[in-house]
Amino acid sequence: MSITDTKPQLKGQNVATVNIFRYDPSTTDEAHYDSWQVPITGSMTVLDLLFYILEHEDGSLAFRYACREAICGSCALYVNGTYRLACKTQLKDLKATEINISPLPHLKVIKDLVVDMDPFWEKYERIRPYLITRDDLPEKEFLQDPADRLKMDDMVDCILCGACYSSCPQCWTDPEYLGPAALVKMNRFTVDTRDQANQERTKIFDNEHGVWRCHTIFNCVEACPKDINQTYSIQHLKRRAVARRFGGK
Amino acid sequence: MSSRRHLSELRGNSDLYPRNVRTGMYAWLFHRITGLALVFYIILHIFVIASVNFGGGSFDATMRLLTSKPFVLIDLTLVAVVLYHSLNGLRIIFFDLGYGIKNQRGIFWALMAVGTVIFVFAAVASSRLLFRA
Ligand code: SF4
Ligand code: FES
Image (spheres, each protein chain N blue to C red):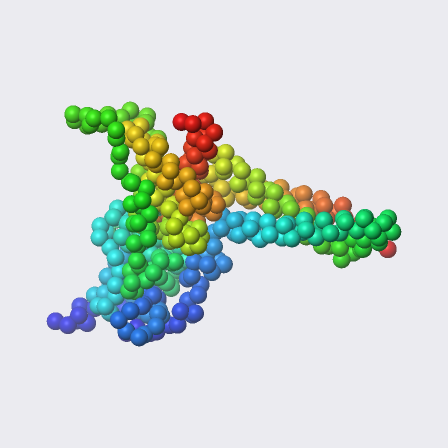
């Protein structure tokens, strides 16, 4: 059975025009958009749409995904002028008959919708995104007051999709800037009562490529599919840095 | 079957296409632009005021020029630039103190409303110079 045999018929259905960014470094072809007519069903997501293209139209389309439930952060894309998780975005919420899908802007495109996330991961590694303790480890688990746990509530939802990093004008212009996601994680550990590396952590974020590169532009906050307020965390770190310089601690 | 479209045909999907630029980024961009304009203005201002060094007559002539109609309009532009830069500057200071971060758009538009009121006041006040016989 050829793939066209199972291809749904367009008749009597809602049809959307879908434009997808294409770039293949193995050919001499330059970057462009490919456009398809795709039948749309009720709860179809952008990711479903990409699968439709992959299965019925063009098997060479490259895109990332894993969990399909907004938890792995692989599928962040730029859809109709906004940053979106492909798996979490229902087409009907886009309220458009024409759907434009591009890779995350300002990152190097590897192929089609797949971008090079290495700069993002490198910054993430640099902030040491794990618990650092000095004292002997407790026998079972670290105990934490629910009230103290609540302080990190704003920051633990990050799924490392990279949307904020891609949206930030400071990241575009300073390749060394840690970026919103890494700084959110940094704040998560600085407010964590169990973490004991505040001195070292401050050195990592209290410099011109750290929090001081942030000019409160808020593109990250607008971009985040998990509704995290990155600027809140960054401003918190800035106040902490100032307090430390003036008051020690 | 797919049809091919050139990148420029879908420029509207680019993140820097004006419609896709968000409030906070506009606020930041204009803050930069007005900041540069004010640096330029302050240098100009120093030179203009320095005309007093060349005697009262020279200063009076400069002042006459500055109260002429085109200069009143330029002055009103200056009022707008100063208002924007100072009000948005306040907004940034709030954020640095930790206030209003979760309501940045609302604060921006509220301050712009305040700015508009002050600007209208300045425009009415200077209309005397603009519409004189
Ligand atoms: S903070 Fe939000 S936008 Fe940034 S990587 Fe995490 S989930 Fe994605
Ligand atoms: S596929 Fe995992 S977040 Fe979308």
